[in-house]
Image (cartoon, rainbow, N blue to C red):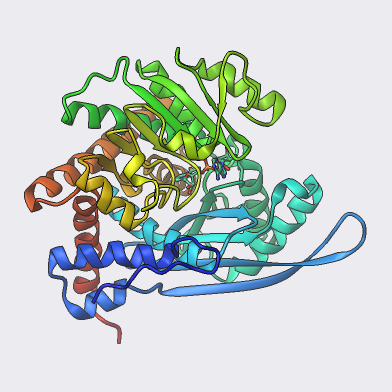
Length: 424
Ligand code: NAD
């Protein structure tokens, strides 16, 4: 029986219940065995840690963090770490489950995990951030490791944060353990192409979707919500492919230009001022307005639950590429499907990051590093394959693209579960 979406005290859809609802829909389409369904519907492990950090003024603050491993049946768990004031266990569980499907949709040999700490890192000094990261890494070290669970960057975590995690684990081991995290700086075993990989994957998927929908990328108009790692790089590469990026935003607000934005200049402006807001020659728009902007393609690249039942009816774009995880609620999905909007789901659209993270892990284990064009070529091959199998499944089963992608990935995880059998 499918779970109902509930509205939490915060007034937003609960991401975990949304994730379960998406899974239930796929399990129904696949007529999944009841036992397998009940295994895959819950996370395998979830750890909550409360840990102290010495602040610069000498006081001690206790932070709460999580590491959730949804599934390890196809290989070690994989998933990013998020630092955000509004992180919840429900959100981390949902993100972990989505990682399981993402790794299966792309065929890479990982299960799904995610981590998070309730903190606004912008309010910490660099040394406080380092101490918080190192202590959180120690607390979750009972779960992570190159053969067990490999974190990566997510919202507000950077290559530097990954380097501190790698160093903390390495100090405990007594030798360097680069393969314990991905998204590291190149100097400590990072991979060429990893920083741009999520945005690059979005741009590749944009071209593939245009091809399937018989549309011209050149001149197609685009709005991008969230101008961080995923959003800014996707915007820049899509502009290189001829798309006209009309609107972008970050947590401080958005900007709109009828002529299209010079993305390199907007990136420089954000680096200089901390936000896209105030970029010359544009008019300000709110994040809510950006989602309803008059464009052909919408790229949500910020957080979950941005396209909901209350605004889905007003979205003008006819193609949505989910660079963020979980930006569309299941109720909004139903509205978009009825309106004929094509949604390329997160588990395919933003899979570029985990694909190149997989390459980084392989390179670290082999101590043999590849060139960037090799990485980008392999990334394109894998993400295009994931897009095509999702598209074909959606046509074969007569279901929307998200459900097509889920059918492919849930079936792969279910098959691995059944062939391994139930221990003992
Ligand atoms: P990031 O921290 O680099 O950037 C996040 C951006 O979103 C920032 O510009 C921030 O200002 C903006 N933002 C935050 N709240 C917002 C709001 N309410 N409205 C508009 N903008 C807002 O994070 P990121 O790594 O780019 O992650 C963004 C999304 O992409 C997340 O959903 C993440 O899970 C997903 N994702 C990231 C990766 C990756 O490799 N970094 C991979 C797959 C998926």
